[in-house]
Image (cartoon, rainbow, N blue to C red; front, side, top):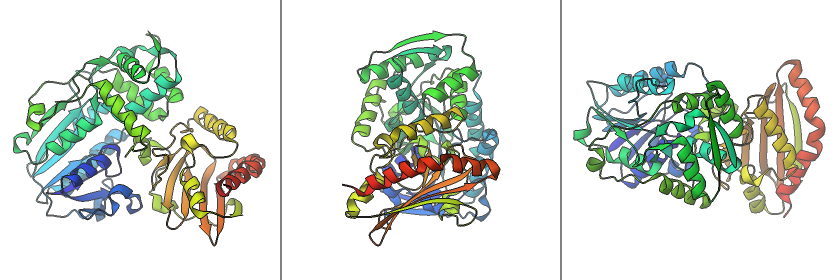
Length: 472
């Protein structure tokens, strides 16, 4: 089949694309920025890419000869306060673009919406589902609860909490019930529902075999990891305090923390149907899902992470707008070293950050991350998805990867920390020399004062970093 897939760089779509290609479907992948094509599918003979921004669809051209489409656009991680309007606008624009095509089926991944008092996030998901309904194509909606898998927002947040806090005083929403579902099962539902006419114009709750509270999920997660954890829930923590609790303990942004707290107050219990037998799936239990996720992490084989969505940080523009270093009105710190082993240096550059650290004065990097978190920034806790691989759009601690090309021997990062200006960090090997360039474009007098305040630290932090990159 010839399939249109949206949200190509997102957590679910990136994984689903690989599964659909294994099933020998032809994919037309929609991306907002052609510089963010995932490495795993970029050169696949059955994969092509078109530039589409569903918030600005004027120049978009969707091929007429598509058989089906996946709508996997999600705005939960965005820093915008009007994410509901953005979601409706995206859905309507998608519908307007797909209706004139030969598309017979649209598949949409939503959330379970059975509770009478829905969160803002789940209300928006239900509104999107209603917007996508059409007389020109059949809509199949899969409504999932908490998704468990390496790199998923829920998995990474639970991991942060469990591995950092032996004793927890937690909000009362930890007693809310839910039915977690492994990401592998989500992908099997999405792929298995393709082309099945009995699923046309229907919605189905998809969920795991267990009903668990969030507290039970934390404790079972700890058991899988071989950790002993103690949890006390208190009714006095308000939603705002709960959001701050999540924000400071985990790698999430405050906006996402607030959205999650709002959602976690609502029970997410699925309605039974015959969907498991139609697709031929027996969803795995929670502990198995957690164990499989850690197998992927230990193999350094995490395909996608929620943190790599550009909306998970402070970056708002397309990457291509920032791909060249600015030349005017900027401060620069440029250092060069002779490279004796290019492969060694490139591998060290591509492994920088995350668990590997920044090779020099890591305590100061951590302090900068704590300060950023204190002032509402992303901090260092996002880490990186892979210990060895980087591609455009990846989150890297409090940086965003703008450009990563090993053949060109160039890595360019853009700062997503809170700054009175904009900052870039570039590594490039030319003519046997490693060029390390930190560029800061200040905003007003505070930007200039900030640069001069941190300048003394550059002398030993950046010198130490470049020395470590070339020294075997």
